[in-house]
Structures are given as structure tokens and as C-alpha cells.
Length: 291
Image: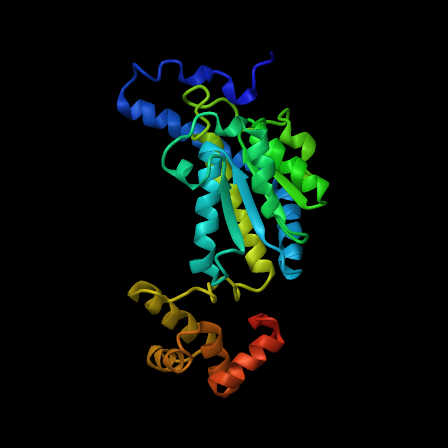
């Protein structure tokens, strides 16, 4: 059986266990620098994936991440950060792990080898959804089950992997493959491969949210001001976009139930909050269309 690329031994770190601590972290840092360069080669495929996801969002679809182990945890993490960042419903972006929610904290041996569980978990998918399967090696049977179920129901699928020879690359409709090379510790794909996957998922979720109007310029206009730090950020956003003082921005937010876009529209168009909400709804929540 051919060795999987993610299991290769790194010639540059064979002495990792006997060198000084500073040399150890230098070597790790040097390897990490390779990740962004490897991703650069896949930017076109990442952009295409963002367009796929955002188009499905506009049809009312959802984004589902499927993965096992580190890859699954990264999917759950990215999904969990979308609601507070972009004020989307908690079911719009979801992360599903092989082995269930408990596998997030405690590794469940053999979960990635369960093809039938993958098919079962993928039954959550609906017509306009997107299934993103994440795996460094690209070979978990769990993800092949997900892909088979999704493909049979004509659901759009995207694979994020670090191994072009992986089986998910053959089954997914769209593939993002970033080959980061052997890990500092052979086979420990939570390192460079995990970093690459995290960076890609950042692009997929953030990029697709930008495409559907969840930002204005580079402002996070749909955040939920649920604590003091975020309230302060909301005040600064309204102040800068509407070109008003911080005090005026606070007043507009309080009148608008701390809805940033509503406060901005109210200030710029000189209308009340209820009317601002109507204008926003008529423009599908896209501030760029209004101001």
C-alpha cells in the first residue's frame, strides 16, 4: 500500500527531539511559513468555492462542514463563529463531526472509518445546501459516505484536503488541495495541514458572507453587540460609516435596538428605525445598495 503524503517523514526535523527549544520552535516556524505559500497555488479554486457557497446562500441554502478529528473540529469552530460575527442564524453554517458532538472534546477511535455514519449524517442536507468535506489525507470512509449521499441527491460538494491522491478528491464536485508537505512530527496533521485547513475555512466562510452583503467595505456591520467590547466596536462602526460623532452613534444605536445597519441608514437617510428596516429589507440587507 502506497504511503499517504500526509504520513511522509520530514527530513528537516529529524533532530527535533535533541535540539534546543529555540531551534525547535524556529524549525516549526519555518515549516509554518510554507503553508501560506502552498495556499497561494489554490486561490483560484478557493475563489470558485466561495462563489458556489454564496450562490447557494442566496437560494436559501446552508453550509455544512463534515470532518473527522482535527478537520472536524476546525469545521465546528468555523461554523460556531459565523452567528456572532455575521448575525446569521445558527443553522446557516454548521459543523458535523464523525462520532458526533462528543468527539469534539474526546477522540472517538474508528469514527472516521464509519461509511454508514457518513451517509446518515449527510441526510441533513437539503436541495440548495453545500457540503464541504475536510480531511488532510482525503481518505476517511466517513467522508466518502457523506459524498455518496450528497452526490446521489445532487447536492453541491467541495473537498478541502492536503492530498491530491485522496479519495474525496475523486468524489467531490469541487476540490481545494493544498499540499503542505511532511509535518514537523510525521503524520501529525493538526500542524501544517490543520493550519492550512483553518486558513481555507476562514476564506470560505468570510468570503461567502462578504459576497452576500454581510460587510460594508471592511466593516463588520452585522456583528451582534453582546458585550461591552462589541458595543464599543458597533459605536465606532456607525460613527465612521455615517460620519457622525461617537455620542450620536450611540444614540442612533440605542434607538435602533443596537442594529448597526439600521442605525447607519437612519442616520444617513434621516429616517426612523422602522423605516430604515423596511429599506434594508427591500434591498435584501445589503447596505451597499442603500448608501
